[in-house]
Every structure is written in C-alpha cells, then in structure tokens.
Length: 546
Image (cartoon, rainbow, N blue to C red; front, side, top):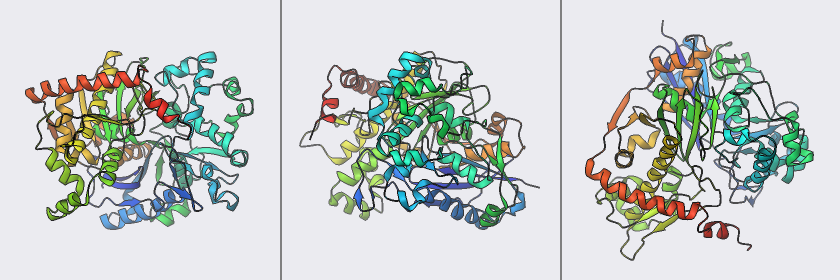
C-alpha cells in the first residue's frame, strides 16, 4: 500500500503544498497555492509603514493550512489513512511574539495597531541600525559568532529583530511570553508541543551546534544592552534536530484538515533547505533557490571559516553536514519592481496582443540581444547587498544608459546583474576552500526563464541543471515528513530516494563564456569600487537627513 507525505512551503507571498509518494518523491497532480490575504503589509491601522519594514499577519499562516491541506487531499483523491507525515519549510528568519497562551500577540486588541507585534518577515530591515552593537559585542567577547556568520551579523537575524522590539516597542517586548520562528509556530500549533528547530537556531540565531557552545550566554546580550541581558528567557531554548518528529497531529487539527489524528509532523526547516533536499543532498553541490530573492547554498562535510557569507550551520539540513548560505537579496523582486515601475503602457499593450505577460514579453525581446549589445552594467543591490561584501546601505545602479536604451535592455541587464552576483558568491566559496562540483537551480523562475539559465551557465562556465517541478521546495519539506514518520533512517537517505528528476541541463557556449567573462570583470570592478568603501556615495545617500 502506497504511503504519502505532505510538504508545505511557506514563501514570501504565498504558501504552497504538495502530496508526494513517500517511496519515490513523485508529486501528485494537484498542488494548491494560497496567496496570503494580508500580503506583505505596507500599512497598519491606516498608517503607512516605514520602507524598511516587511510585516505579515500570522493568521495568514494558519489560514493557509486550513485551505491547502483539505484541498490537497480532496483534489488528489487520497485516503487520509495513507498520509503518514507532514513536513514544513518557512522563510527565515520570520518571527513574531506570542502571549502567555502562545497566541500571536497581535491578536490582542491592545497591540492591533503596533507594527512590531506582527510577524517580521525575513527581509524586514528595521533592525539594521542595531547590528553594529551585536558585532561589537561579538568581537569583544565571542569572536566565534562572527565566524558563523561570515564576519557580519545581519539585521534579518533573530536577536537583532528582538532588540528592535525591545527598543522600539517595549510594551510588546514586555508582554511577549516568547518570540518564535513562524515555522516553529506552525509545527507547535499542529502538534500542541513546543517546537524549536535546530535549522532556524544554528543558521540565524547565534546557536553553535558544531562546537557545542549553544547560545551565547547572558554576558553577550548584556554587552549589547543591560536591559536585554535576559533575552533568552523569551526564547524556547530546548531544540529539536531536523529529520526528527516534532509531535503528532492533534485531534482538533486532524478534524480541521481532514487528516488522521497522530499523523507525524516533522521539525520544520528553512525554505532554501527544502530545495537542497529536493535536489538530493550531496557534498560540494551548490543549490540555487531562486524566487523573490536567491539563496546560494552549499553543503560541505568539512568546516570552513568563509568570510562574506550570510551564515553557516551544522546539521541545519542533514546529519553530519555543514550548510553554508549566501545569496542575492532581490531577484524576482527586482524584475518585478522594474516591470511595475519602469515599463510603459505601450509595452503592456504589445505584450497583451502577443498573448504574453509583461515578463515573458520583455524576455522575448531581451533574448534577441547580443551579449553586451546594450552597453549596460547593473549592480543588483536594490534591497542591499547580502553577501561577499554585505552592506544594507548599498543600493542599485545601472551604468551606460543612453537615449537609445530600451526597457528590454534594462531588463536583461538586471537579470545579468543577479547572475553576476551568484557567480561572485560562488567564487567567494571556492576561494575560501569550499569546492563546488555541480550546480542545481530550483524554483519557478529557472523553469520559465531559459534565457536566465543560459546566462547563468555561460557566466559560471559550467553545466547548470534545473529540477523538473517548480514545487521542489515543498517536496523538500515532504522529505522531512517522510523521515519524521519513520520511513527513512536519515534525511540524506530520504532525499536520495525522493529527489526530483532533472528537467534540463544548460551547458556553457564557448563564445558566450568569453563575452560574459568580460562583462563580469567590469561588474566586479564596479562591485569593489562601491562595496569596498573606495566610493561610499551609496552609504552617504542612505544616511541623508531629510
């Protein structure tokens, strides 16, 4: 009798779910999506939110469960008795405060109009202004913390966000019983158990899982601010390893979802790690999770102190392996910004006449251009620079614009800039001793943008494969559901059995490789000029007092 597992992928704008055969990972045809009703909030109680804020409503996450799973089971015609496990992945670090009953604090009418009582999305940047305090404290007391984060502590991390709440919404901080990752919260809701995944803790919470130091002690947080010294009292510090069972589905949630009470629920993982598992966990492979942003993750059996990455965590993805993460802050977000703000109605009209959406139409025009024909080079830091020379104050740039420049020229230059950023990240890995012997791209964009994929292969000068389904990340979370259900001994074993087939592999074209090597060299010159501090104009513009 076949056994099935559910994988739920909580992304930036929506949640998706798949039902997969636990034996071979094949995904059943109906894969529903639930766009978050509140989206990424731009205002609250009629007031606009600051531009660096990225908030969500936690209710959207549980509403997603109640829509996705019944839809998944009903439309695929599977007997709930044959569904043995549920896996969950979530963007990281996305977190919010809970009250003493472990309900989101924003549900309390006292805090309905308080932004920092809501879910702070991974790309929320309100804590950027406090990161220097964490870095200074680490240099003084615990330098190993900076080794875990590539030399810098990002504002998107867990404790800087908690400090933002402590400083700017003290009543929220005081009233919070605990701050929780959104993925941990979903697993806790489904099982009635307290859940805190090692994946979230070791990647973005200063938790040393390799050296055995755990969380930094009280002195570290006291160095940042005396009143912040006891912050760990507001964190669930009992951690559970990935691949294990977080608990069993409660009777109440089983009834809501149309599943069987006692179904295994896996310890949640970071969304990019789902992509790794769907590709087949392997040492020395770079997995690209390409969506609104892009994560460039590499698995390594050896520890390396790599500067300029976002973070690394031991056994954050699988047993015995280090997960190293770096990436591009804006990819799909950047392309979307351009079409929404910089493309004329005439182009929209032509796209409609051709039966295409505007992205497809622009790609069709851009693909006809020769490499370098537009004479444009862009820097892709429209949401800051995340890796290699990370700096939240860096901004986007397009060089070479003339009166002859067309929208498709800019669109292609922006795509090239994000590919160049991926190449720069991979070069940083290899120069630090992390070998990369294969590249796999996952997500919806690689499947629908062959131009981007060919540019990536030409720029990297190596084959680049893309997985068969755009739901690879959700399948990856299902891998953990299968392991939690006891069908496999390890995550790595489950990953190899359930991994997705390759849809297509792109190979470098010699003349394109030469052309892109020239453009990439120019990109790196610009990159170093603005990111190294030689010209700090971007930072000065960011800091203008207006």
